[in-house]
Length: 58
Image 1 (tube, rainbow, N blue to C red):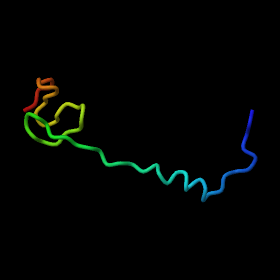
Image 2 (cartoon, rainbow, N blue to C red):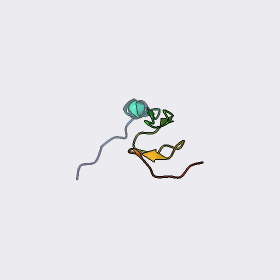
Image 3 (tube, rainbow, N blue to C red):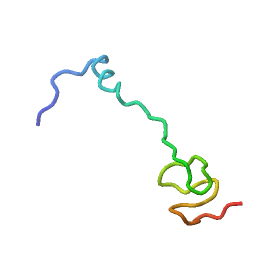
Image 4 (tube, one colour):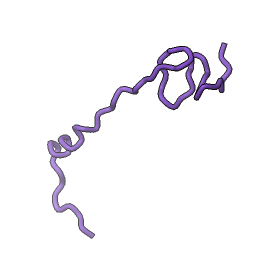
């Protein structure tokens, strides 16, 4: 089984990992209350998902 002969240097390792950035989460507007919410999640403000209320909110 092939194995690397030499260890990768710090600079080469860091160059490879330079693209591992964390992106900010994308938000979409809730169609019911127009508040920002994560896509494919229940709206924390009104409790609606896919046009129907799934969570009771006050």
